[in-house]
Amino acid sequence: MRTTEIELWELAAPAFLHALPALMEIYTAAMDPPREQLPGRRSIMREHARYPRFRSVSALPREGGGAAGFAYGFRGGSGQWWHDIVTAELREHDPGAERRWFTDSFEVAELHVLPAHQGRGIGRSLLETLTAARRERTAVLSTPAGRTAARGLYRSCGFVDVLPEFHFPGSPHRPFTIMAAPLPLPGGGRRRPARRSPVWQWTG
Image (cartoon, rainbow, N blue to C red):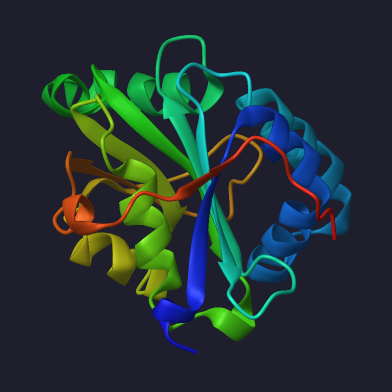
Protein backbone atom coordinates (compact mmCIF):
# COMPACT_ATOMS: atom_id res chain seq x y z
CA MET A 1 0.00 0.00 0.00
CA ARG A 2 1.27 3.47 -0.86
CA THR A 3 0.65 6.56 1.23
CA THR A 4 -1.44 7.91 -1.67
CA GLU A 5 -4.03 5.29 -0.69
CA ILE A 6 -4.37 6.83 2.76
CA GLU A 7 -6.60 9.74 3.70
CA LEU A 8 -5.69 11.85 6.71
CA TRP A 9 -8.48 13.16 8.91
CA GLU A 10 -8.12 15.68 11.69
CA LEU A 11 -10.33 14.73 14.63
CA ALA A 12 -11.74 17.40 16.89
CA ALA A 13 -11.54 16.49 20.57
CA PRO A 14 -15.13 15.14 20.73
CA ALA A 15 -14.51 12.97 17.66
CA PHE A 16 -11.23 11.76 19.17
CA LEU A 17 -13.01 10.70 22.34
CA HIS A 18 -15.72 8.93 20.33
CA ALA A 19 -13.04 7.08 18.36
CA LEU A 20 -11.00 6.15 21.43
CA PRO A 21 -12.02 2.44 21.48
CA ALA A 22 -10.74 2.07 17.91
CA LEU A 23 -7.60 4.09 18.60
CA MET A 24 -6.86 1.94 21.62
CA GLU A 25 -6.93 -1.11 19.33
CA ILE A 26 -4.23 0.51 17.20
CA TYR A 27 -2.19 1.45 20.28
CA THR A 28 -2.44 -2.11 21.61
CA ALA A 29 -1.43 -3.70 18.31
CA ALA A 30 1.52 -1.34 17.85
CA MET A 31 2.86 -1.29 21.42
CA ASP A 32 1.77 -4.68 22.83
CA PRO A 33 1.47 -3.31 26.38
CA PRO A 34 0.52 -5.43 29.38
CA ARG A 35 -3.26 -5.74 29.44
CA GLU A 36 -3.51 -4.37 32.95
CA GLN A 37 -2.07 -1.05 31.73
CA LEU A 38 -4.75 -0.42 29.09
CA PRO A 39 -7.45 1.14 31.33
CA GLY A 40 -4.92 3.62 32.67
CA ARG A 41 -3.65 4.47 29.19
CA ARG A 42 -7.19 5.05 27.99
CA SER A 43 -7.85 7.39 30.92
CA ILE A 44 -4.67 9.32 30.14
CA MET A 45 -5.67 9.72 26.50
CA ARG A 46 -9.11 10.98 27.52
CA GLU A 47 -7.47 13.54 29.78
CA HIS A 48 -5.07 14.63 27.03
CA ALA A 49 -8.02 15.56 24.80
CA ARG A 50 -8.75 18.38 27.26
CA TYR A 51 -5.25 19.84 27.10
CA PRO A 52 -4.52 23.21 25.45
CA ARG A 53 -4.35 23.27 21.64
CA PHE A 54 -5.07 19.57 21.36
CA ARG A 55 -4.82 18.17 17.84
CA SER A 56 -5.36 14.64 16.51
CA VAL A 57 -4.87 13.14 13.05
CA SER A 58 -6.01 9.69 11.88
CA ALA A 59 -5.01 7.74 8.76
CA LEU A 60 -7.75 5.83 6.94
CA PRO A 61 -7.30 3.55 3.91
CA ARG A 62 -9.16 4.95 0.90
CA GLU A 63 -10.73 1.57 0.23
CA GLY A 64 -12.52 1.76 3.56
CA GLY A 65 -12.28 -0.10 6.82
CA GLY A 66 -10.80 0.95 10.11
CA ALA A 67 -8.05 3.44 10.77
CA ALA A 68 -4.47 2.39 9.97
CA GLY A 69 -2.84 4.79 12.42
CA PHE A 70 -3.24 7.92 14.48
CA ALA A 71 -1.26 10.63 16.20
CA TYR A 72 -2.09 13.41 18.61
CA GLY A 73 -0.47 16.10 20.66
CA PHE A 74 -0.99 19.39 22.48
CA ARG A 75 0.82 22.39 23.81
CA GLY A 76 3.23 21.30 26.55
CA GLY A 77 3.44 23.14 29.83
CA SER A 78 3.86 23.05 33.57
CA GLY A 79 1.36 20.89 35.41
CA GLN A 80 1.45 18.14 32.78
CA TRP A 81 3.00 14.92 34.04
CA TRP A 82 5.29 14.15 31.08
CA HIS A 83 6.45 17.75 30.73
CA ASP A 84 7.20 18.13 34.43
CA ILE A 85 9.08 14.83 34.73
CA VAL A 86 11.29 15.52 31.72
CA THR A 87 12.00 19.17 32.45
CA ALA A 88 12.89 18.36 36.07
CA GLU A 89 15.62 16.01 34.79
CA LEU A 90 16.87 18.60 32.31
CA ARG A 91 16.79 21.38 34.88
CA GLU A 92 19.19 19.36 37.01
CA HIS A 93 21.59 18.26 34.28
CA ASP A 94 21.15 20.53 31.24
CA PRO A 95 19.10 23.69 31.91
CA GLY A 96 20.14 25.08 28.54
CA ALA A 97 18.37 22.21 26.80
CA GLU A 98 15.27 22.83 28.87
CA ARG A 99 15.16 26.47 27.78
CA ARG A 100 15.89 25.63 24.16
CA TRP A 101 13.35 22.86 23.68
CA PHE A 102 10.62 23.13 26.32
CA THR A 103 9.73 26.79 26.84
CA ASP A 104 7.39 26.81 23.82
CA SER A 105 6.78 23.20 22.84
CA PHE A 106 4.23 20.98 21.15
CA GLU A 107 4.19 17.54 22.75
CA VAL A 108 3.69 14.64 20.34
CA ALA A 109 1.99 12.40 22.88
CA GLU A 110 1.18 9.35 20.73
CA LEU A 111 1.92 8.22 17.18
CA HIS A 112 1.07 4.63 16.23
CA VAL A 113 0.52 2.66 13.02
CA LEU A 114 -0.92 -0.84 12.81
CA PRO A 115 1.89 -3.37 12.19
CA ALA A 116 0.35 -4.43 8.86
CA HIS A 117 0.61 -0.82 7.62
CA GLN A 118 4.07 0.03 8.95
CA GLY A 119 7.00 0.82 6.67
CA ARG A 120 4.81 2.58 4.09
CA GLY A 121 5.27 6.22 5.04
CA ILE A 122 2.09 6.53 7.10
CA GLY A 123 3.91 7.44 10.30
CA ARG A 124 5.81 10.21 8.51
CA SER A 125 2.58 11.54 6.99
CA LEU A 126 0.91 11.56 10.39
CA LEU A 127 3.83 13.31 12.08
CA GLU A 128 4.26 15.98 9.40
CA THR A 129 0.53 16.67 9.23
CA LEU A 130 0.14 16.75 13.01
CA THR A 131 2.89 19.34 13.45
CA ALA A 132 2.10 21.46 10.38
CA ALA A 133 1.05 25.04 11.08
CA ARG A 134 1.67 24.75 14.82
CA ARG A 135 2.46 28.02 16.56
CA GLU A 136 4.90 26.44 19.03
CA ARG A 137 8.62 26.80 18.42
CA THR A 138 9.55 23.13 18.97
CA ALA A 139 8.12 19.61 18.98
CA VAL A 140 9.08 17.14 21.72
CA LEU A 141 8.40 13.44 22.28
CA SER A 142 9.61 10.23 23.89
CA THR A 143 10.27 6.94 22.13
CA PRO A 144 11.70 3.60 23.29
CA ALA A 145 15.49 3.77 23.33
CA GLY A 146 17.52 1.81 20.83
CA ARG A 147 17.84 1.54 17.08
CA THR A 148 14.14 1.36 16.29
CA ALA A 149 12.23 2.26 13.14
CA ALA A 150 10.38 4.96 15.08
CA ARG A 151 13.59 6.60 16.23
CA GLY A 152 14.91 6.48 12.68
CA LEU A 153 11.75 8.22 11.47
CA TYR A 154 12.07 10.97 14.04
CA ARG A 155 15.73 11.55 13.22
CA SER A 156 14.91 11.84 9.52
CA CYS A 157 12.31 14.49 10.41
CA GLY A 158 14.84 16.65 12.25
CA PHE A 159 14.53 15.36 15.83
CA VAL A 160 17.65 15.13 17.97
CA ASP A 161 18.30 13.32 21.25
CA VAL A 162 17.82 15.53 24.29
CA LEU A 163 18.01 12.73 26.86
CA PRO A 164 19.35 9.57 25.16
CA GLU A 165 18.29 7.26 27.99
CA PHE A 166 15.52 8.25 30.35
CA HIS A 167 13.49 6.13 32.78
CA PHE A 168 9.97 7.20 33.60
CA PRO A 169 8.58 6.47 37.08
CA GLY A 170 6.82 3.13 36.95
CA SER A 171 8.95 1.85 34.03
CA PRO A 172 12.43 1.45 35.56
CA HIS A 173 13.46 -1.36 33.21
CA ARG A 174 12.33 0.26 29.94
CA PRO A 175 14.57 3.13 28.79
CA PHE A 176 13.20 5.88 26.57
CA THR A 177 14.86 8.57 24.51
CA ILE A 178 13.58 12.15 24.78
CA MET A 179 13.78 13.87 21.41
CA ALA A 180 13.06 17.37 20.14
CA ALA A 181 13.00 19.26 16.86
CA PRO A 182 12.49 22.85 15.74
CA LEU A 183 9.20 23.61 14.04
CA PRO A 184 8.22 23.52 11.26
CA LEU A 185 9.59 20.07 10.46
CA PRO A 186 11.32 19.64 7.10
CA GLY A 187 8.68 18.61 4.59
CA GLY A 188 5.78 19.38 6.85
CA GLY A 189 4.84 22.51 4.97
CA ARG A 190 4.34 20.52 1.78
CA ARG A 191 1.64 18.34 3.29
CA ARG A 192 -1.94 18.90 2.25
CA PRO A 193 -4.09 19.77 5.28
CA ALA A 194 -5.93 16.86 6.81
CA ARG A 195 -9.66 16.77 6.26
CA ARG A 196 -11.56 17.91 9.34
CA SER A 197 -14.06 15.69 11.11
CA PRO A 198 -16.10 16.97 14.08
CA VAL A 199 -17.77 13.54 14.31
CA TRP A 200 -16.54 9.98 13.95
CA GLN A 201 -18.71 7.04 13.01
CA TRP A 202 -16.37 4.09 13.53
CA THR A 203 -15.46 2.90 17.02
CA GLY A 204 -13.88 -0.45 16.19
